[in-house]
Length: 401
Ligand SMILES: *Cc1c(COP(=O)(O)O)cnc(C)c1O
Ligand SMILES: [Zn+2]
Image 1: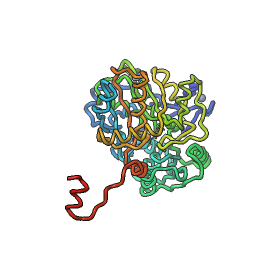
Image 2 (image 1 turned 60 degrees about the horizontal axis):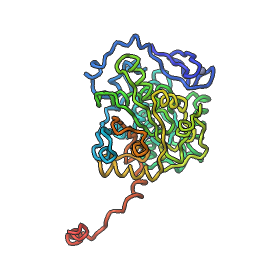
Image 3 (image 1 turned 45 degrees about the vertical axis):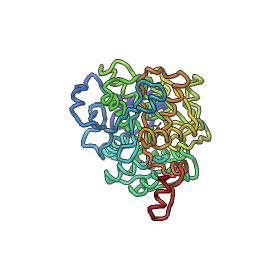
Image 4 (image 1 turned 90 degrees about the vertical axis):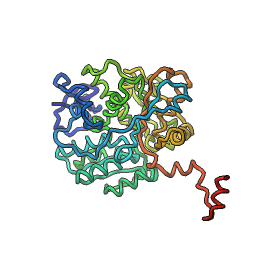
């Protein structure tokens, strides 16, 4: 049986504890399994369908999960962009192909299942958008109410539409994401709602399966995994999962965990580049990539360990680089992602140029959310459709034929 463990002081808590941080020191918690009791092999896993639940021996859920068939997302080889950057091997794991259109579903299938397992009946989160869309969807599947707090006016249209239609109680606060998270955290502690932001250690358990799937799809451990970083939960989760596989003897090396942030919202990059012991919050984060518009990353402590222990790094990219890579992925590779997702690939381009990434490395980028999440940003970037009269001559002349 697993337990919860404080990443700072090592305090241990039983599996039925409803806790988000260590009672003794206030730091983050993580789920720990007695790995010596795990009986599964990689071959056993490979017999099962590719999905979050292929890896159930390393997940905390006991009974049947609340599932909408998350995970099993495609890993694409970026032939054109990779060649152009001069990379031997560049892949993108398209997490936009999850049920709600982002990797948050991996966390929510586990998180909402755990809410039920712990006897919780209302779930809540603060969100830059995708967490709320996913929570609303999984709460609907579970048949329980959900409450989501959004920063007013700062959430992409598709995400708000999802949260509303799946039936969450959607509250927009006149403040930023970081404030929304403080408020919902307080609400959950005072009123017993179950908090499903990435401070929740169970959510990260689901998300770690991104790394497992990459290994199974690539057939080898990549040299580097590159992720966009907001609250830094995903990069921490992937590192934790791969560390477990190493401790189980399934793999013998870890990829260099590499984070990419938007220049206007880059507290993790600053901590890495300046060698700081902790992440210092950025008071007014700003970027077109709203999913990573986060100044006080909740999982900063875990992410710094993930990056430093694997010899990875963190870099920032401008909004212009993000949007131009979003377009390149869409028009040259057929991969439609939202701006935050393109940050990982934009970061790779920059790191190759700066000599941080070696051209022989096998690089996997996690592209985190679907293009349709944020249609407004896309439409602003593109020339509008050419409108013509409904006759063949106008059509031919519009096409220069
Ligand atoms: C949540 C999210 C991120 C950031 O992930 P963190 O775990 O908060 O670092 C990046 N991209 C998209 C599309 C997201 O929804
Ligand atoms: Zn502690």
